Length: 176
Image 1 (cartoon, rainbow, N blue to C red):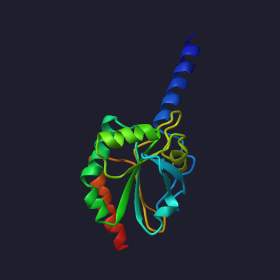
Image 2 (image 1 turned 90 degrees about the vertical axis):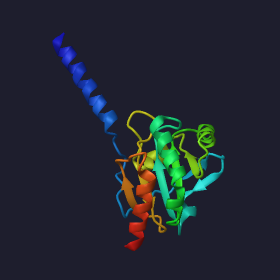
Image 3 (image 1 turned 90 degrees about the horizontal axis):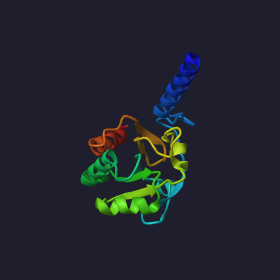
Image 4 (image 1 turned 45 degrees about the vertical axis):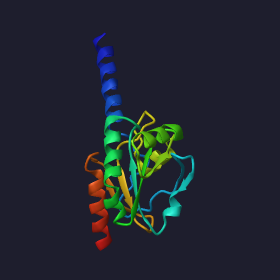
């Protein structure tokens, strides 16, 4: 009986570790081409990353609309959008929520940038942000340059500070 318990406990520890540390299909790095994708905005309109060619793009992934950290991050981008736009960039928030949930989140918090619905988690998989075993994304932020290459990746995102950090990052990248 002890051997069965030990085996079950080991399996539980392994599953927990995998859930906490997702397996990435492909690890993206700075300088890589940003994976191309299409998605629906919170308004149900088509968004194609290719349309952002020639422009700075901030793509921030978040776990779930209307949860505390995600609301804090979205509102921080809303409140600091002028800093990001002064760098010639536009912000797009993306999660595995559907269009209806994204629209409700956008409206409730009076957001001033588009939210993208990744309800099938394809974009989260492309960018390596999908949590293993569940249809939810990690909180990562990508800065994509006008050539549609990844200029910066932030995996240890502070929801309060992300917008300010992104503006400063773009300013620094433009100097290179």
